[in-house]
Amino acid sequence: MLGWLASCWTYKCPRCRQTNMFKEPLDMKKPLDMHKGCSHCSLNFEPEPGFYYGAMFISYIITAFLFLAIALILVFYFKWSVNAAMAIVIIVGLLIFLKILRVSRSVYIHMLIKFDKSKV
Image (cartoon, rainbow, N blue to C red; front, side, top):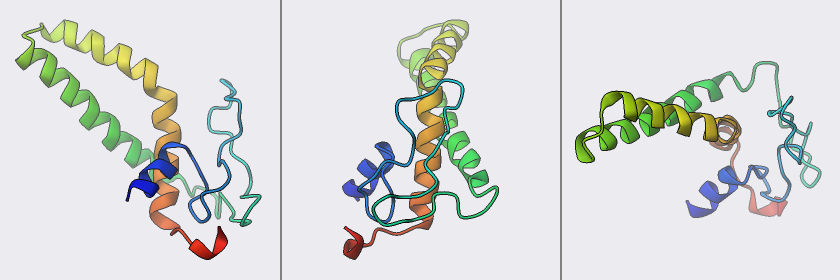
């Protein structure tokens, strides 16, 4: 399980966990610019048009629970006002926006393509 999470977090190929899925360095104009396939095991990173549509739902789930947790902790534990908590949530959202975009794509493809030890 730890290898799966680390692979998702670092955007490694889900089948071999050797190469990066996204092009580096990050281009702010194209934050989701990916390689066509894995250079190690030749897995196609976009098997069909619209493949990453499901990643949108994963992104929504991650951000909704994260932002809700932050807001609830700030309001009920630290006794902040709702407006101050919302300001912090917006700032956190701006800071982690690109990371969440990429992680949600990585999690989505990792859920559908299993790790293959023979490809390492």
